[in-house]
Image (cartoon, rainbow, N blue to C red; front, side, top):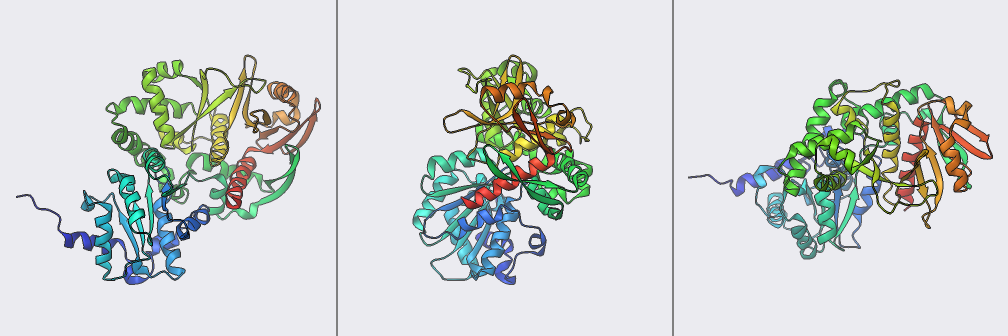
Length: 475
């Protein structure tokens, strides 16, 4: 006779997961962890009661979603919410297997001993482990109109799809990405080494950031490239000593070998693994389906699907190409792929130094990773027979309005004439103030009637991350 999990065991587990019902606060371990800067953007969505919507917190593994939810619990308690009316349930726990979301909510209310009907906050962590979660969640939002539902999940692919398809008007999505370099500096309490500067860029004066401690900032930038995407890793020397074990097993393997195969019915995980390894090793490189298929040994038709899955799981980002006149190609035969976070490559291979032969690609990946936090912006790159420009911003009419050349070198500050592709592209598209990144050179250089703005790569990465978060707050 097989034994079933009893209701008493389920209620005990729910009580165990909600220690604040007794202590009135979250566990010290979580309380002492610094809050991510994205917390201030997430919080208003939870307090929003005028619009009846569940909040769906999405993002790749290990970026701090669960910790953010605990910080949210503490914030609710401090703002006067009855701790017993905040319910936290980790769906991944096998004890909840096959119990519908609504039944878990009913059990949890019973476990508190309260008889209140309204004003509950219910948090379901790792929601992707509940089959058809979006249908059940939508039903809860419709049925319990005076309660607030918050869910989180790692498999961004399924979550994004499900929340868009089924939760129209019922869900608000919030994407928590890997750490920006700005957040890294902030979490490390290094804001003192940063100073704001005003720079003429794109026909207006724009706020950029620099430093009088460049050596220190560059050292941290290399650390960020190696370990910086994950809050847990930046504070742990033990994990940094063996990033492969932590990041590869906990982040890459779980997504490639478990999350994506179970979501999309992928039977041959070796192909997916081979493709991701090929992309990670060549992050920032230009690919075609032909070369990628040949190198990873994955058939072309399967390849397209896998790239889509990896992009939806927030592991990679595909960047499309324009020509020297800023025009798009009729057929996207060539494209670039970047990791959403440079430390993914380091985990698969090995940490790199400031003089490593791959440092140029990793600096480029790190800078693209900062821009990926802007959901309202699509980066492009320009390439033609005789030249290339690393990143281009298109205006509303799809005409190039700015250009960026990413270099981990100081030579172009003294020899701007060598930036031939950038000069040609800027003249062709009437761009007056392109930005060129360097190791340590900063300032404005005029050459061939073009005003080159030079900024150290580390300072530029910090600037993009900080300005992005500021823009999101204003939105």
